[in-house]
Length: 340
Image (tube, rainbow, N blue to C red; front, side, top):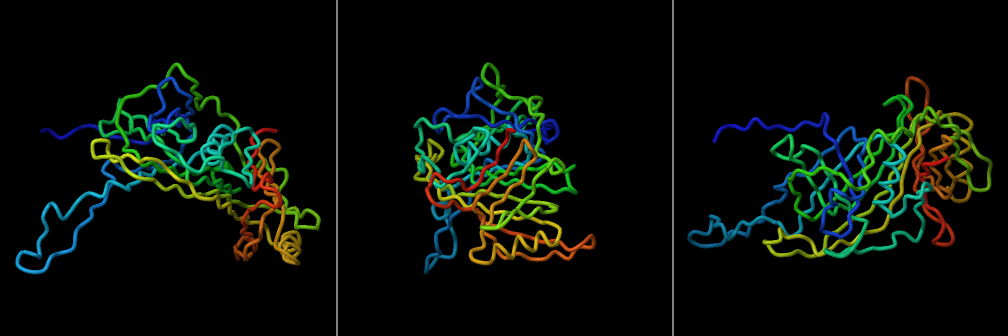
């Protein structure tokens, strides 16, 4: 057989996220889909399994291995997809929907989330998503890579005044227990949002409020260089079907949310007051990063060991934190608003 001339490259390849109707069934061509403003991505290969080997036997012939002693470990494998993208309003909302089930513009994670903690194969659910990589298959142009029933395990927003033109970048990690497929698929006839519709981006240069308000004190206005906010949870597959069904999972179970982050600000009287007043009783403060359109708020953030960055352009205060809810479970842990 002659060497293939097919190849795949990221340039010009579209990455689309689609809403599923039933877990285990990929988004249809006429489904609800969003073309993501992806700048980089990676995904697991189709042969994403490891080998398990039985222990050697004692006695004559016991130091070799038969094909019955070495088998592919397919029953618990999970395929992973990683995406990096511009933080547009649509992309942020779609990630919030995939991770904790809301995309209303306020995009608040509250203490009672998630509404569902288990998901079952062949049962209706709009939480798992299909991730589609145009021309990402081995055949290259004209054949796509499709990952169905993916669950989001992490969504991170990070912005730096000195990088990427100040554009805030999003990263997201998804996993699936279903075998990826290679097929030609063109989205048409449904609700398909293109990149051209995503003109509003979260940018550090547009920030009008960068404040920490320690519990019981006044707001401290930070000169903010960069920030990071991460929302993470675990996703574990349950069970497996037969080899004829590619060992697909019976379902998933999800773990609790951890919301963590960090601010890097100029080290001055404002940042000093922010970290010392917050340390008087409990290290608690309210966070507000606001552009007038995009706004990250965390009403109850816990300070976690502040430190100094000794940079040539001036000392900076590094302020790590963890977000929690207080009082009723209807209280907000963090909100990533995308509307004015």
